[in-house]
Image 1 (tube, rainbow, N blue to C red):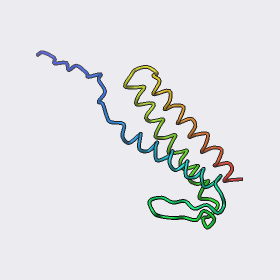
Image 2 (image 1 turned 135 degrees about the vertical axis):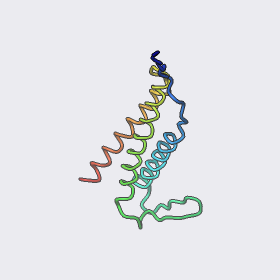
Image 3 (image 1 turned 60 degrees about the horizontal axis):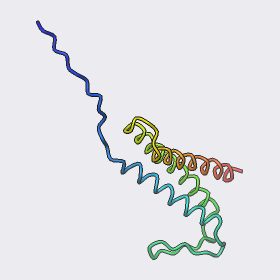
Length: 119
């Protein structure tokens, strides 16, 4: 009785990186809004698509929460993107190194403003 052996496929499926980019860019946007709220003028008004928010009426936790949450989203999105790029290429490329750098910045932002928020 012959034994049939199947060859294993070593090719990884190519999956779009839309989710990683979306999560990372939402994190960058959230961190940018949080930084503007934290360092912006006290009487400033944040306007997004015809919605106005007076920064002075929001709680003090909003900018710090946006900075910490944005840093975590930046880290998770761009770290997954860097890993995906590294696995597809088989070696470190400029784009995967840049994604790693941005994810590292996200960790630093989340850690620093998380400590500010706690203390």
